[in-house]
Length: 93
Image 1 (cartoon, rainbow, N blue to C red):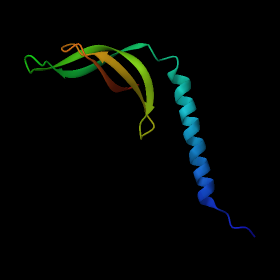
Image 2: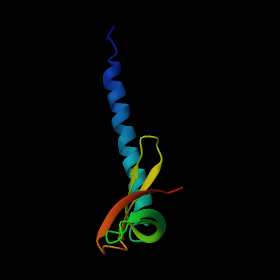
Image 3: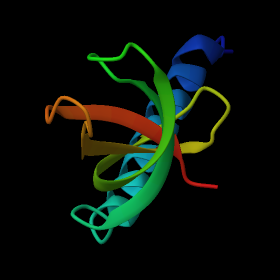
Image 4: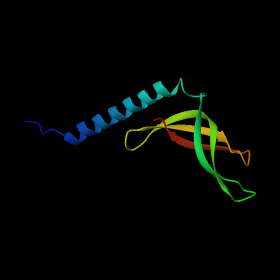
């Protein structure tokens, strides 16, 4: 009788699950990329040194899974004090 190699089976299951998760994320990511959302951040004014809570319009550039199986939006926004484009992540829910 042949001995089962459960390590190979488990590796195959994990690889297939990873591929399915990527496909699912890409499917839902495509219609969101380029859309805008409002996010709130506490940002430092480099001139005064004060931190201010600001609501920003951010553009969705992608999606990512968290370790807890939540989905994060990857977004970019223009920093209101410096004018530089910054990237951050925001929970969808």
